[in-house]
Length: 319
Ligand SMILES: [Mg+2]
Image 1 (cartoon, rainbow, N blue to C red):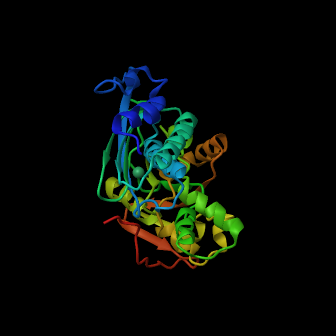
Image 2: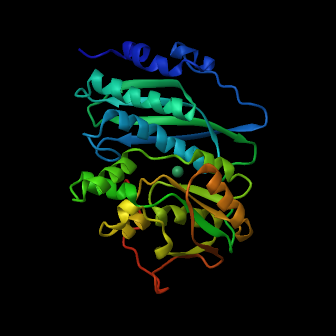
Image 3: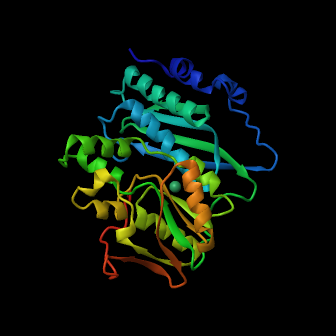
């Protein structure tokens, strides 16, 4: 016997709204959100479909956490602070209440960790695959959001953390054999992104442009270049790989073109390099300079000998 829609909301979802009075305990038609004076609302939405964005046997709590975290990563890329979120859940018959309780437990853990509340939601049944959608709300001081546009020729290109781990984690879940010790770390990177909120906020006023790497370094840097009307040159050998990834075949290709890293990529003026490094220390996130913005359009990825590499697959596309 599975919970009906009203029981589901009352038992599972309402507790996630307590602590935000404007959510009205999810009992009204909509939530009321106050935006502090001098701040803008930042809104993003990401959907995840079973078999496309997560695997049917991924633990439900990790699916919930990933759903929240990929959206938080978009706030991070804008330099915003989280406020709240709304969910929509399209549930096939085989998803039972236990699965949903675990999903909600994952949301509960992470909303406490990142400081936001559920403001509303909807559930429906579906004859199709399990589909989860989350709309996130954040705020940023008016005019201070980091955008994809604004990168200037001569800017340094920086990335946070290490790249390619999540793509390797997915390959491992699909059968790539690696030693357990490395494999577990890489799978965790696929299932549990780390939204770089403190970094994004600290980069306000310093970075000229920013994006979170969800579709792969080459694809997402390409978005910044398109929006900014510039080009770039990056050195493949400078792309940061984790110790766990380094031993795996084709790790560099994954770092350049694999998705799901949810690290930040940003352009900052060369004069700001010392400030950027200090920010990395302060927020305890490794930052690596991987190249520079050029006036000449297009992206050139150079190998260790300085020759341009050709990349077959510029990034993960869902369609
Ligand atoms: Mg994004």
